[in-house]
Length: 212
Length: 79
Image 1 (tube, each protein chain N blue to C red):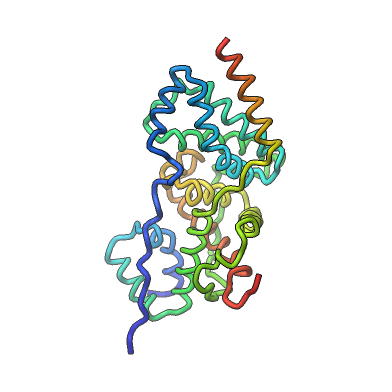
Image 2: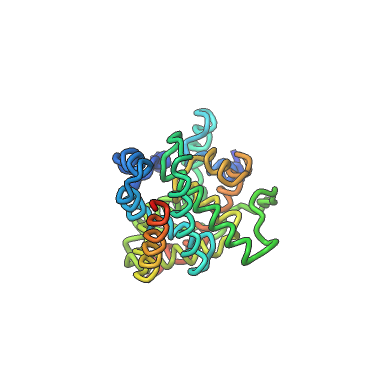
């Protein structure tokens, strides 16, 4: 009997397609005072940054404020940007800080991202079902967006933020750890828990035989 | 290798951050264990779906407020 074929796990795709080749040129122009270059950068990243702040804060007004403050702060501190990382990564870190400040203000005491938390032994997945090929194609783009948003919104903030940075914004594990003041093992453990919880959340929509 | 260990190593397996020996043991287990194979596949799909999802366009009012705030700030910074 033939063994089932395994699809080799592709490496996580890095870097994001969002980082265009002309980014360093635009950043250099913006640093030299070219406002339209900065506006181009804003236009390029505003949707992603808003999704980021929205996913972290889970509140539209806070997300909007955090995004706005992030871009203003980025402009103000552009001279401090050393170019050692991608501009987008730097911007993401600023936006995460702004979003976390909003979240902490709204839910004081609830959100402490840098403390050790029990990621639990209960990570064994339940609801092990086949999703069939391309579950995304079963939903309209906007409906899929709502599902993804709803499911990620159900994660506790410490897990949600790690997943957001690592798997959506495609920061490395080390960059994520640095941005959140966490150890690399803490990032890995939260990431695992987040991925499994999201898998479980999406299972109810994507399992084979489930019609939208 | 037990299913529990597959789950423990899952994140590093999906990120291709495991040493080749451990990776091979996991793949041997996956060939035999359908449940683990499904968990690996659906977790991989979860990451890809989120990673590939396009952010929705900014609501018009949000975009307008952002650009007004920027314009005001940039003008002030230039003055």
